[in-house]
Length: 176
Image (cartoon, rainbow, N blue to C red; front, side, top):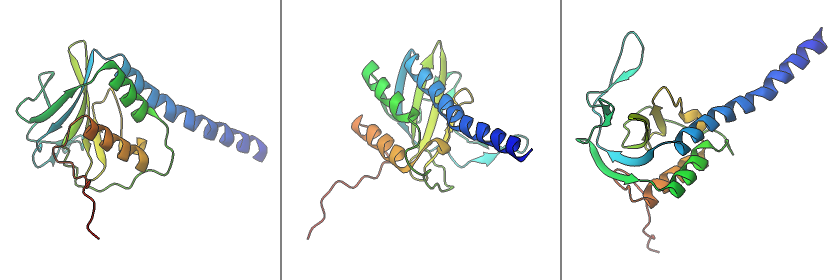
């Protein structure tokens, strides 16, 4: 009996990484099969409240309105080439290399990945300050998919693409 339970437990533990990677493969496929992918930086969405029935956050300003990006809040935008999308897909879909990153609770996102496919927009809204994200239900991406290295790589990726709004990045050498 104990032997059977131990085997069953080992079986489920062996499946867990495969399921986690499968989830990331879905995100990778969504990026690679998109009609287009854009990175944006945007202004605050406002002070959030919480829907009492669903427990989900509600913001006064929305990132997407009527299946279109809310142009009133977008500060910077970069349409990605196919090569850039491949690099981004590889970055966000790679398995964790270290421990999950520590997160805070502020969630004041200023950056997003917008994925356009057949007149539908999916997104991953990102707060680099507290290391939290929110995504559309078809992506189901969360901060649990991030380790310290992935956060650093994603922030660097945004900076390399010219999205500097609300990113604090010390590049100036210190005086001796």
